[in-house]
Length: 315
Image (cartoon, rainbow, N blue to C red):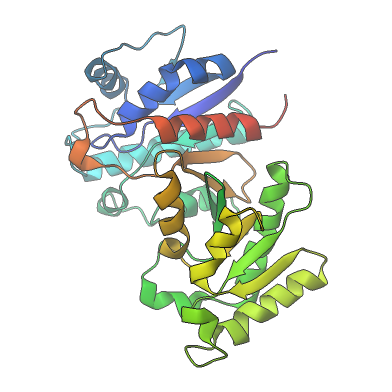
């Protein structure tokens, strides 16, 4: 059977993206299961390979350069690296939509670099949604025994309560359920987290649980979904960790990512669910502090590629 062709964008040129992209694409595990295609600056990728003690082999890894990365800074973000990283993501996305690639895996980008380049998106998730004209989407993280879908993503904490609506939470519950089915879980059990300490304690510590989260859960239950909650945030992840539920719907970014990164920092994978294409990424950032030293670990990137291959549609 012909191997799946997976687009791997190199991410921000100043960070560890080029290094982990190269290391993952050349790893024996990835070479066995797919045909990796690196999307980025050829010179940057060749240098990342060199500092990693290897070299790019055209027979093992295809390289496509839509545009040079420009005057990027090693270990720092820049408008040049922000613009280039967007161009690589756009190229891979359009390739997936055309069917040129079976899936795409994205190395980390810098939100500050994107902003400096004049781009409007706070991260991959929102960018990919716009590039694919997707309205209903969510950020899902997988690591160890945990699966987490986020209701809100890259917004200030003070804005979270105002963004929580019955409709938004219900749609994320639906997407979480569908994502589990996509992962091969036939009858998913979904747990929904509360927002406030002790789940609001009957309104004493906040009314979001009563006014928006509970109604969303009841709507999902009314449509036949196996969903329960809202559970206090400090216990809901224990339910997932011990296998009592299959996935957690968390209300905001750090609520969901702190427990996942605690137990699966080097193996966590981010999946954008709801898109018409398959997209995964490692669950870490640009790590400028260790960039271009040859020491970045590709574990999470390798797991992201493996999951992309697993999820990719049959030919």
